[in-house]
Amino acid sequence: MAQVIGVLIVLGLILLVIGWVAANWLPIAAAAAVVLGTWGLALLVRHIRMMRYFASDDFLAHKVAIASFVAEHNELAQYVGEIGRRGTFALGGSVTGAQAHLATFQNASRHRYRRDRNIATYQTPFVHNCSLQVVRNASADPIKYVMKYFNIKATETGLADVENLGDGIIRLEDAITNLGQREVSITQSVNPPKFIMKHYADEFMKRVGAELSPITVPYPVYMFEYVSAGGNSSQRSTVTLNRETIDAMIETMSAKIKFRRSAAGQRALMTSRLRTTIKERDNFTCRYCSISLSVEPHLLLEVDHIVPVSKGGLTTHDNLQTLCWRCNRTKSNKIIAS
Image (tube, rainbow, N blue to C red; front, top):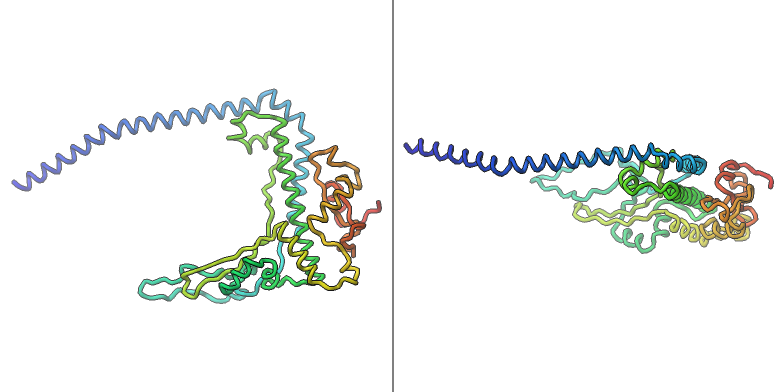
């Protein structure tokens, strides 16, 4: 009898659950279906509006009007790729962990106790494994410690390497920034509906014919890392060689070099400040084609060595000139008589 009563109670509970689900979840499911259907319809309507806009006479007319500007934009995007491929974006390296790949690490802790919650980073020349004091000192004096522990020597050759790195990074930064400004100008010229730029920005650029360069600036990043023996604590100091850091390193290295009487020692320092000085001296005008920022607001100007460094040219004011990116791209490392 007791078993029968128990079975009846279980059946009753099952029926109650089924009734509750039927009373509560079916309306919820119906409401969810309505919401999903409404959302899907909204997406369909928006897609139809997008297709109609890109097929409209207004958009096609704007596309034709800015075709030459888009073509120049695409050529500059290809130039950005060339800078990225030709540039040297690595400098020095740490020897700690250089042979770590020859060993196999295994945590052999017992009693299910894992101590290595923080594991040191090896097998990369841009991480220096060190003491906690070195990490803190590197945070306070980053240039000194990057040069010391990543084998960047204060010599004429080392200074030239840093300047070459800075040249590649600054040219890439300026070119990418210029591309971004051009893309904004394209958008403003066409002035598409807000929903187009909100939901179809990439499609808009594709329809206009503009190539979007996926290249970013590959800044060298140096890390000082401390990990305690038990892996319970870890601290890092990171130094990124961007424009500001590279300029500081160039000036620091120059102060350490004492060859002031040599021709190399008398040269200028290829910093952002010098680039600005040369552009101002040349009135922000290309020395070859004479185009200037006053005529072409989106003009990308670069500072070029008249006699290339690879052919013995020095970074002196009389060996530097302002060129637009087209002329500099054509010149490459050739010596062209002015």
